[in-house]
Image 1 (cartoon, rainbow, N blue to C red):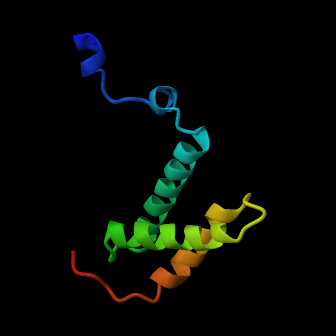
Image 2: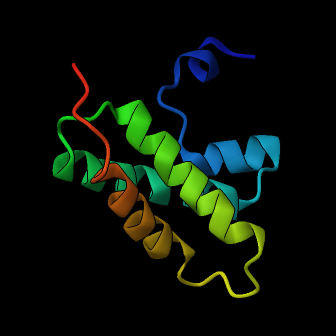
Length: 93
């Protein structure tokens, strides 16, 4: 492996998909959920980002477990997570 290949940062999602044969939908979902976490973090600045990400992921996983139609799972999970996060007390940062 050449030095140029080792120092090329950051690796793009296309490189990851090609190199590790990861389905594109997994990367797209993770990126989409990360954007949702960003939006929720603005709405709930008093909560730790890990708390927000964990809540969103649980909501998404719960919804997707029994879903036959997956087109709107991300916005539904974001809405459900926002409802849950609104009930949580403030965390110390």
